[in-house]
Amino acid sequence: MTEHHQHIKLPEGSIEKQTTTLNMGPTHPATHGVFQNIMELDGERIVSSESTVGYIHRAFEKIAERRPLYQITPLTDRLNYCSSPINNMGWHLTCEKLLNIKTPKRVDYLRIIIMELSRISDHLICNSIVGVDAGAYTGFLYVMQYRELIYEIYEEVCGSRLTTNIGRIGGFERNFNNTAFTKLEKFLKEYPSVLKEFENLFTRNRIFMDRTIGTGGISAERALNYGFTGPNLRAAGVDYDVRVHSPYSSYEDFDFTIPVGNTGDNYDRFLVRNEEMWQSLNIIQQAYQKIQEFKGAEAEVFHADVPEYYLPKKEDVYTKMEALIWHFKIIMGEVDMPKGEVYNSVEGGNGELGFYLISDGGRTPFRLHFRRPCFVYYQAYPELVTGGMLSDAIVTMSSLNLIAGEMDA
Amino acid sequence: MALNNETIQKKLVEKFGEGFFQFEESYGMLSFEASKENNLKVLQFLHDDETLGFRFLTDLCAVNYPDQIGRELAVVYHLHNLAENVRVRFKVFTNIAEPDIFTATKLYAAANFMERETFDFYGVNFVGHPNLKRILNVDEMDYFPMRKEYPLEDQTRVDKDDEMFGRG
Image (cartoon, rainbow over all chains, first blue to last red; front, side, top):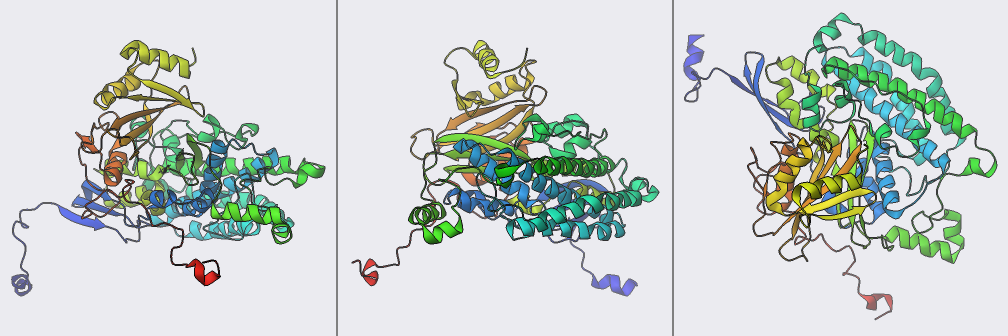
C-alpha cells in the first residue's frame, strides 16, 4: 500500500484541496446528448457547476440566410429531434404569417393531430428517461412500442420517421391515407392503458417519489426570470402555454386544461408531463372527431390554395408546362418574399419554440433566429443542482428535457 | 384596462418624452427603437412599471445591417407580459467599431446565455456581463461568423461552362 503511494506524483497543492472536480460529459451516459458539466464536489454534494454547450453546433442560422424557405424546414428537424413535426410546423406557420396565408380548418386539425402526437412522443421519452436515470428501466421499455406507433403514423403521412420534414407551407404534401387513420385509431384505443400502466409504475412509487420530490426545484419567480417555458415553467406553477396564450393552428377550437405544479421540482415536472400526455390524447380525440365531420369536397382538403408556395401535383408537373415552371421556381427558391419582420412561436415539446424571421424582400431570410427553449433554461441548471447530491443532478438533467440538437442549433 | 400597443406607446412617451423612440408596428407586434446608451433605462422601466410589467425576456439576438453606416448592428429584445399576454420588440443599434451595450443580465437571468450567444456570433460587447465568452463556437475563433462580411458560398454554379452545353 505504502509502496504504491510513493510512485504517485500528486500535483502541487492537491493535498490541500478539499473538493473534487468532476467532468460530466461531453459524452456521458447521463447527459443523453453532447454537453458538458464541470462540477465541483464536496463528497457527493455539488458545490458549484459550470455548463458548456456547443459541441454539436451546426450554424443553422447562418446556413438559413442562404436558403429559400423550403430548404430551411429540414434544418428545423434537427433542433428538437424528439418532436421534429412541431418544429417543422412551427416554421411553416411562421412562413404563413409572413406571407399572410390562411389555412383551411381541416389542415389545422390534421396539423394538431401530428403536433400532439409529437408532444406525446417527446414527453414519453423524457419521462421514461427520468425513470431510467432513477434506476427504473422497465417503464422505458413499456412505452417504447407506442413511440414506434407514432413514428409509423409519421411515416404514413410524410415518409420518414425521425427527421420528418413534414408538411408544406399551407398544409401537407398529401392527404392522410387510411392506414394513417387506422394506426391513429389503434393508438387512441391502446395508448391510454399503457400510459396508465406507466403511471402505476412511477407516480406513487415510494422509491421514485423519494428520488424526485424536493430535488431540482425552482420557484415560479426564478423560473420566469430564467426564461423557462413549457412543462418546466408550468411545473413551477405558472400556467403559460403558447397554445392558449396565442393560439395558432385553431387551438382555440379545442377544450383542454393546462396542468400546473407548484414546487417546480423533478416530481412536479414528471407529473405535469404525464398529465399533458392525457390532455394531448384528449385533443387528438377531439381533432379526429372534427375531421370526420367534414363532408364532400371539404373532407379532401389538405392544403391551402397558395400556388406560389405550395408545390403543384406531381402528375401535373410531368404533363403541364405551367406546373413544371412553378415546381422549378419553388424548388430553386425563385420566389421573392414580402418584406417584413415576424416573430412567431409554438408550444414545442419542451417550451416556447420561437422563430424570428426578418425578410428584406429577397428570396432567402435576411436573418432567422431560433428561440430554442432548452438553450434558454439550461442556464438555470447550476442553480438547480448546487447544494444537492450528484445523483439528484442526474435526474434533474433528464427531467429538464435537454436536447443537445436544440441547444446548439 | 387591458394593455394594448397604444397604451404601451403612450406610457413610454410619457416617461421618456417625444422623439425618444421610433415606433412601428409589424404583424401586430409593437416594435420600438432607442439609443443604445438608454437600453437599460428603458428595459428597467418596462420591467418595473406596474401597468407594463414586461418581466419575461423571450428572446435576445442581434442583426447585422452592413449598409447602415454607423448603425450596423442591432440588438433585438423580445419581451412578454405574461399576465396581459402582450409582446413587444425593443431594438438598439450600435456601430460595429464600438459595439458596446449594457448587459440585461441583472434584470433577466435568461439574458446570460443569450448575450453570450450574441457576442459569439456578432461580437456585441455586453458591458457588465458576468461571463462574456464564446458559447457555441470554439474559444480559439477570432472572428464573428454571423456578420454579413462573411458570406456563405454562392450556391449558383460557376464550374459549368455554357460552351459545353452549346450555348457559348
